Length: 419
Image (cartoon, rainbow, N blue to C red; front, side, top):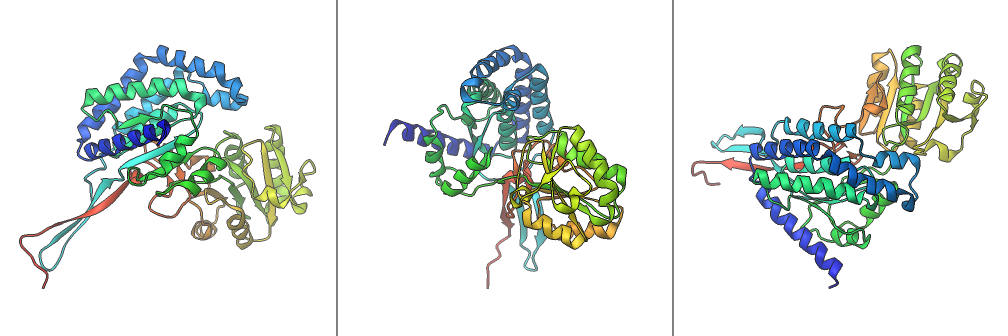
């Protein structure tokens, strides 16, 4: 056994032990940890900024784009936002021990369905150091120990944040190993952790599609994930023109490099002539390149011809595909064919069309007259999220504290036996 494998086993074992302690930690302890962590982030913002400067200085060595470097940067405002996020998680109701349902059987048995932690979460993520604090907060609030494997490009920032979280855990009487940061950039470490189902209960990868596919293929425990975010906005024949333009532009342009940004625009033929030139002009003014089918290009002369690959692409860039359809049925068929099952939106004034779209589109979130950018844990009132799942088991859509729990049945009797 080499030193790296020995190190990974030790981290996983300690996380497993911490999870057992966290399962019986009180809500007050977890609130104290979160609020103490939030205060320390504010008090040590200068030290965090200095650590972050080391990462920014090394960013060019990793070939990071300007946008990636911006995501890596810890400004005073972003440090404040991290602290606020921890306070928000602290204020959420305590999930562990919640009685989800309860019933009394004819023989007098009381059967309770009780919320419990998942156990140990292995969380793999890239770039943004604020995710270190967010992920730890959500995991520990939901009673789980977490092994944090951040990207090497944020190593100094992540280490500084993790040190604060560890100090606050000791103050709150929580196990020191509740949130551990993997202290090696060796990519082989990920493979070691993915082969430890005896210690790790679930893995959550957050990053590019290549990372997520590797984790899904190698993991020997369940994985909560989404591969890509090819999100659609469908403009129905009964759409309000002003709302349609605002929602398309916001869905696409508010932030380009995120999984809930719209990549595909689908327009009903009855309104294509009036709405496409207007919306296309605004998108182009925002620097968006349009790739459209032949019907749409009649109204979008600046658009390039779309290929089959364009309809299924997650661009994460100022590019958008455009498709004209003859009916709601055709729109739903197109969306379901090319969707990554992340987020889809319909713009319509017809309630029946909205209900039909919501019922038949198979994605983790369907927006009715609202931007795709709202598919987010904070925006949904979850406090924060550790990722978005496009799977169909218990966690789907933004994953907050409840999605990081399971349940068990607790049965109260007074001597009943089964006849």
